Length: 111
Length: 115
Image 1 (cartoon, each protein chain N blue to C red):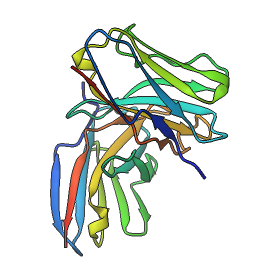
Image 2 (cartoon, rainbow over the protein chains, first blue to last red):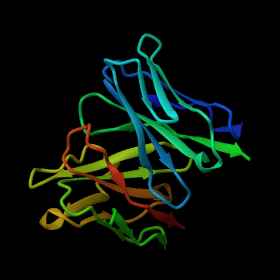
Image 3 (cartoon, chains in turn orange, blue):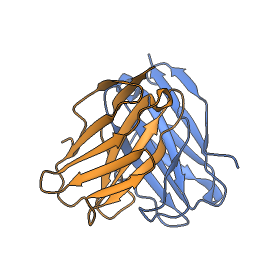
Image 4 (cartoon, each protein chain N blue to C red):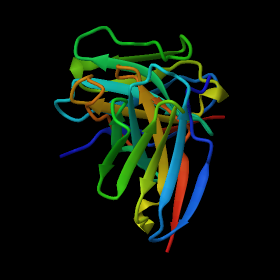
């Protein structure tokens, strides 16, 4: 049972445009969500998080939106840069250290 | 400072052999986690250590998998009698505490291939 789903395995965006990465979850007990970014041959690195009491969290070029009724979150990157090309994982947790990760979306930002 | 390190970076083994994967967490981090990423899958939680508490082994897929953490620092994940389905990237992470708001810092992973 895939509790966190990232249905788009890949996404290509032109430099300077907006990248939107989507994530759906099924576990209504999730109350904290995270996005991690992974470059090849490196471990994932934390990018941004959001608590379920919020519907938006912004950090520089990165904004995460949470729609609890739809059990959907999205990561917006504006403007996209070639260095943003990586695999992005979303994860959810229900009050514990156990993060449940999605399968990732590979973002390619074209110069 | 130094991040999480893992060794080896790559391991190729024959079916039925035992393998040991090592993780050196960030100094001072009390929580340590093992995950694996199989082809086309997300990161799958395997096991968690917090200080001297009993580990949470709920994610280990079979009794062929075990892990230990010596002295609250270095951890070793052991897979006995490896099978082809064990082929994956095994990732270790550590965090300052086990609070979910504490960022988990990941190592680069060990790519295990079982022939």
